[in-house]
Length: 126
Image (spheres, rainbow, N blue to C red):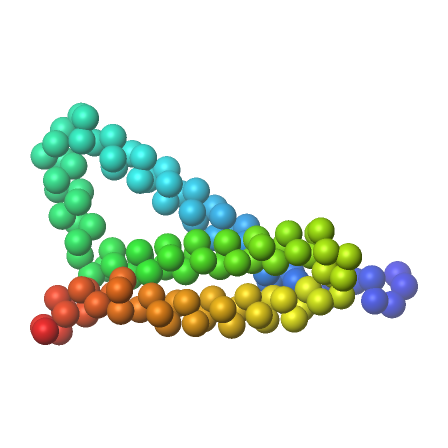
């Protein structure tokens, strides 16, 4: 095989894998969301019980993970569009990935309090 043709698992591969994993996780969330919302028509009491479970600190962590998955998937999707449709996209794909990661980290830090604030106050008090 000529030199440089083997894929060595660099940033592009990991962003590809993360994009697929986050897509599957988002799909799973949407599937569960449709199922739990449909409970209101079957049994309002079961729906109320389900919503009560969603107010626990563990679910708050899962919500934070959902936000992380959605934000990464969206930002990386914009990067993929840029790579595909910008003539210099492949040349700058690595820099765009690191830019996406930087923006993602800033947004995730900003999402800490709004999403996890209630869970932290419930666990450790006001």
